[in-house]
Length: 66
Image (tube, rainbow, N blue to C red; front, side, top):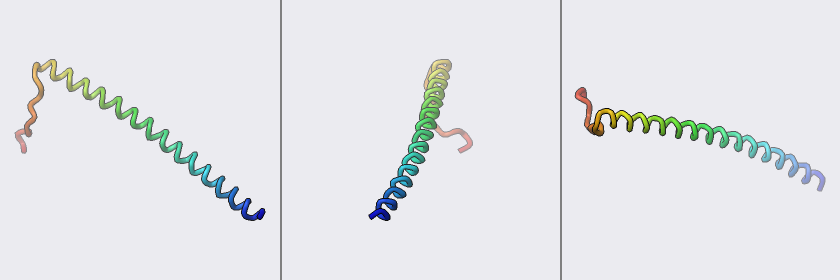
């Protein structure tokens, strides 16, 4: 009986460690996503500002070298 309890405690300890490690990965991914979202917002603002300066939306066509 004690051996079974010891094995279960070892497994629980391992699983707790895995859960903590996965949590750290998720936290890192959330930070990366937030940074990417900020960059996208900045790029959208820049494009919007360029459209305002030019007075029209940029044409959606292929460049001449295609």
